[in-house]
Length: 219
Ligand code: CA
Image 1: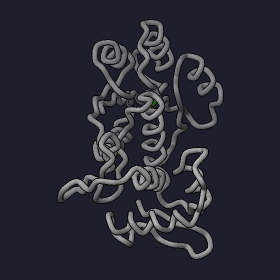
Image 2: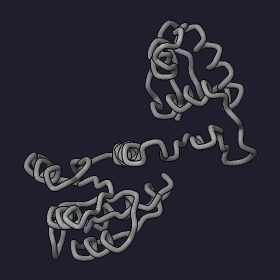
Image 3: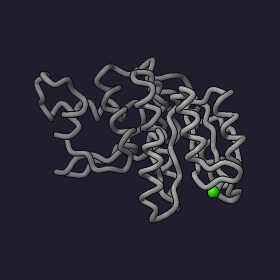
């Protein structure tokens, strides 16, 4: 996935770039509006993170011009704190999402992944947890070291849901709702069976049982 980061705050850039690279993005940088406009027009990106307060040409103008040219790349804008008007103007100009400064890098990454998922329809982004990647196209686990581990359809859906919700307490009922087709006989006890099988494939410690409450996936 290739991402254009448009930001003139070099300290923020220095913080974000390694995090974005770690999350699997190839990152291009632009530090002013004109450069951003040019790169967005001439390169193909999967995602753009666009600060609105930029030298030479402001981010809103850049965005409006991309959209006027028919560029549909998903754009997340970075807005100043307490500026609701920037958010409104940005969304009207064609932004897909926004994040208010200051923000946690985790939130940016999560929003970018969500944007990617929406924009790619069925061709979804990579889901990662420490030490492994979920290969969604082939429904298998790709450990950082070692051979791919195939998953059955249900194991795959369950793991994907866990990986999309790391650190959250997920009840058996909720897992059942998200893992099975609508008209499937929803026996939530089956979840226990599938959790056990997943643990055999990804390690017992990754899915913690909270007795009487559900499970927590350790991302
Ligand atoms: Ca700025």
